[in-house]
Image (cartoon, rainbow over all chains, first blue to last red; front, top):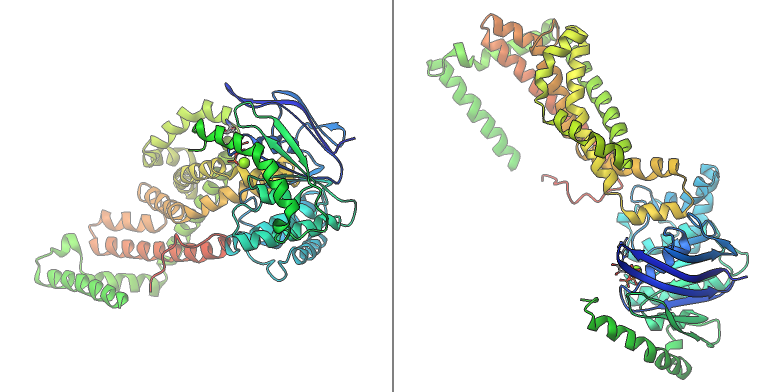
Length: 265
Length: 254
Ligand SMILES: Nc1ncnc2c1ncn2[C@@H]1O[C@H](COP(=O)(O)OP(=O)(O)OP(=O)(O)O)[C@@H](O)[C@H]1O
Ligand SMILES: [Mg+2]
C-alpha cells in the first residue's frame, strides 16, 4: 500500500485545466521531491494530498483511504507564513495538541521540547513578527511535527530563506526525518520545490512535472546517493552532477515552454 | 520641545479669549468668560454636584460600548462567514448605516423612556456599525495560509472560529477602538442633550435653557476632559492587547 497515491487526478478551475490526469505513488518512508516550472500546479498537487482541495475527477488516497476533507494523516509545511500571528511561538506549536484535546500545560511542555529540537530554545515567547524568516520556518516545522503525522507535505518551505539558513535547515530536516521525526517510523515526505539541487540532495526520488496547463508527471529519477547526506557537500560529488544533468535535460524543456507561453512573466 | 509649543499655543488661545471677554470684544453673553467657566468647573467638583451626572454619562458610555461591540462582533462573524445571509441583508445594512442615526434619539426616548436605556440604545447604534464593518473586514482578510495551516493542525470549525476568525477580527476591532469608544460617548451625550433628567448632557441642556453660557462651556470642558481620559485608557489597553502586532503603524511622539 502506498502512503500517497494520485490516480488520474484532474483539477479544473473554471475553464482552466491545471492538473490533467496526474498519477503518482509515494511509498511509506520515502522522500519524494516534485519539481516543475513556476505556476504549473505543484501547490495544487500538494493541496490534493492535504485534502484542502478535491479533484474534479480521479482519486487521491492517503495510506489506502480516499482523501475526503482535511487529511489528518498529513502535516503541511506551507510556502508562506502559516503561523497564527496572535500566538507566541510556543503557543503556535502547542496549537495542534490543544485542538486535539490535550491539556494546556501538557501541550505547552511538549511545545517547549519541540522548540528545542528545531533550534528555537528560549524563543518560545516571541510572536511571529518578532522572529526572522528562518525562525518562523523552524516554528512551523515544530508545529507540524509535534502532531507526529506519518506523512509530511512540504511546499517550497525554504524558498524564502537565505542560502546559508536554507542549507542548514535542509540538513536539519534530513536529520529529523532519518531519526524518524517523533521517534516512530520514518515519515513519508512529499516535497515541492523549483530548485533542482535542493530536490536531488534531499530525496530518494525526483518527479518532474510538465509545463501547464494540464500538468502531469512526465519523468522520475531515483536518486542513489548515499545517506546520511550533507546537502552542501553532496552537490560537489560527480554522482550528483550527472544526476543533475540528466534531470535538468527534461526539466529545461518544460521551463522553456512555460517561458514561451509567457506564464512566468 | 513639541509640548512647550503645545502649552504655549493653548495659553495664547485662552489668553486671547480672556482679553476678548474682558474688553467686551467677545460678548460674554455668547462666548462666556474663561475665568467664570473655570470657576464653574471647580465649583461642580467642589460641591460634588457633577459626580452623579458624570457617573450616569460614563455608565451609559460603557454600556453602549460593551453592547455595541458585542453585537457588532457577533453580527460581523456571522455575516462574514455566511456570504448568503450577507448578500440578503446587504441593502438593509447599507440603509441602516446610511441613516443619520441621531434622529433615532426621540424614538428611543419614546420606547425606552428618558432614563439610561434610550442613551445606551443610541450609543449602541453608533458603535455597532463601526465594529460590525471592522469585524466583517477582519473575517474577509484572514490569511488563507493561516486558515489552511490551522485546519491542517486538526482545528474543528468551532476551533477555527475561536482561534483564527475571532482573533483576526479582534485586531480590527481594537484598531477602531478609539472611534467606537468616542462614538459611545457622543451617543450618550447627544441623547442626554435631546431629552433626559440627568447626565452631563442634561446639565448643558439646563444651562442653555437659562442662557448660562459659562455653564455650557464648563460642561463642554468636562466632557472634553472625559473624552481625553477615555482615549488615553484606550491607548493603554491597545498596547496591552496587541502585543502580537508589529507597531510600525503607531507613531510615538518624542
Ligand atoms: N483557486 C484558484 N482558482 C483559479 N486558479 C487557480 C487557483 N489556484 C491556483 N490556480 C492556478 O493554477 C495554476 C497552478 O497553481 P499552483 O499554485 O499549483 O502553481 P505552483 O506550481 O505551485 O506555482 P509556484 O511555483 O509559483 O508556487 C496557476 O496558474 C494558478 O493561477
Ligand atoms: Mg506553489
